[in-house]
Length: 95
Image (tube, rainbow, N blue to C red; front, side):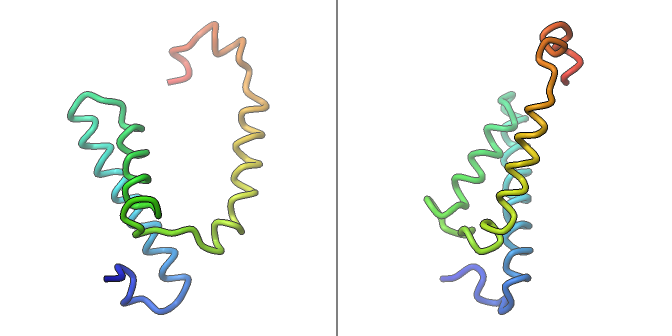
């Protein structure tokens, strides 16, 4: 059964898939927090579970190819401008 059979426009599908990803990530992050485990592990597990490799509820689309390069550029520029010497001097400030 197709989870997204009730939607017929591509924009609605993308928004609904984004909603599913965010809810699943938040839910598993909460579960992992209660188990006193890092919440990012729960968020990653949510992505693996609902992604195309396990359940297939969310699949790559044209939006991924459109939005991925700018996000990668933003992430790279953020890491490129980080002052690691300052971070090593005061690691609590990173939190």
